[in-house]
Amino acid sequence: MSAQPALQSTSDESAEDADHPVTGSHGSFGIVPGLVWAFRFAPDGAATPVDLNKPVEVDHNSWLWLHLNLSDVRARNWIASSHLPASARTALLAADAFQQLHPTGECMYGVFADLIRHLDQSSKTQLGFLHFAMMEHLLVSGRHHPLTALEATRKEIEDGHKLPNVTALLEMIIERVALAIEKAADALSTELDELEEALLTSIPDDHRQRLAKIRRAGLRIHRQVAGMRASFQRLERDDSQLKPPLRVAAAKLAQRLDSIDHEVIAMRDRAHLLQEEVADRLTEETNRQLRLLTAVTTLLLPATFVTGLFGMNTKGLPLTDVETGFLWAMLLIVASSAGIYWLMRRIGILR
Image (cartoon, rainbow, N blue to C red):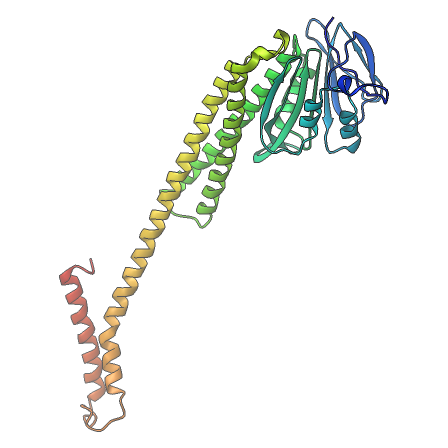
């Protein structure tokens, strides 16, 4: 008989029973509070939505996916009082912001990152976390924010996608996580293309801010993809602890995540190179302006000297008694500036 989890713990049950799923082929979870959606899968893999307002029945001819809103206190209380293994309950309720994956005999549980989904589209930079616990006939998952991969998985199931077992569901969710991250990386790469094209003509004021934002997003995504890949690589080495029905295609998923990680790293490095190019262009423009300012200041130095000289209130100043003294002074100013200009051109300061 396959192991089935009971939903509610009672006061007369032992602590040992609370740490392991209850064995049995029939039963009821009762009305599960905080459910976002639930599906029952038949032996042929076809899914049927479960009425969220009715008790969720358990039988040996089907398996269930229960997805909860972890921001709902009632859902958290239900998880805490369920007969899921204690470590799985902890992972479901934890506020951890790091990824993990743990196989423990008849159960596998963990936390994975996914892109947060808004009303009409998924975010390219905001990450949320999927908490899950998986047994042979049950997958309990939860999140605090709507997640892109979960929404995509739900939609495909509602469109008739069949899943033969619970591990196929988990693999499908991870594949949709990888696909969402790949699309986000493509969108960031497209934005980099636009910035690179614009750099050929000008340097808009927002280029540095946009490039910094892309680099931050790339770094954040890289960390999560690398963490997820490492989790499946460890699972590939340690999956002997799991029952055969709970073993996922860890090597395949790790390879898929590895290829996406390479794309994210390439995009992040490209953003870094563009940042350096923008910095070089800005430095070059600043140096050009400083050079022009220096040249103008140098050209005006003789004129400043002459006007300062003739502006002194002392006796014996030249041209004070000459009727054309002002014209001679102006001619001296122009001649001195022209001489400095010729000298700067001669030595190569002005080109």
